Image 1 (cartoon, helix red, strand yellow):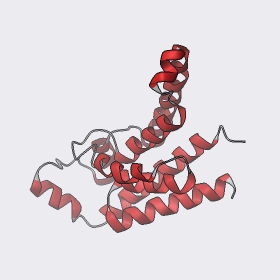
Image 2 (spheres, helix red, strand yellow; image 1 turned 45 degrees about the vertical axis):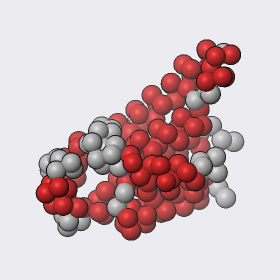
Image 3 (tube, one colour; image 1 turned 90 degrees about the vertical axis):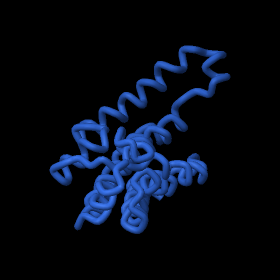
Length: 165
């Protein structure tokens, strides 16, 4: 399967999963898992907690957070590797800095509330039950967020595949 085919498969899986379950972090991780065998299936389960800006705390975009975890899994040294060779950390750090800049170039931000402001003209307090219910029931909300998730997965796939031959 070509890089483009893998990317398309990942993007479609992420979009479809978000449309079905409306959980950005997990949808992004599920899509990425379709393109990268090194991602453990447990990451898909665990990444559900990243949605809504990290457990609904409204910080970093859940899809971005999933992308960072996958980037870390691919590029970060283990503790024992870094203890043996401290010079391994800066190149790993540069990778996640590059990924952050790719997201900022695409979305102008990595923050969930700022992306919501672009999509919906306002932010939401997802920890407030009334705000959360309003947000979840907004017409077109799921599709708009699914499009963000799909774009995030595409960016991440292209970023991670640039080192592949």
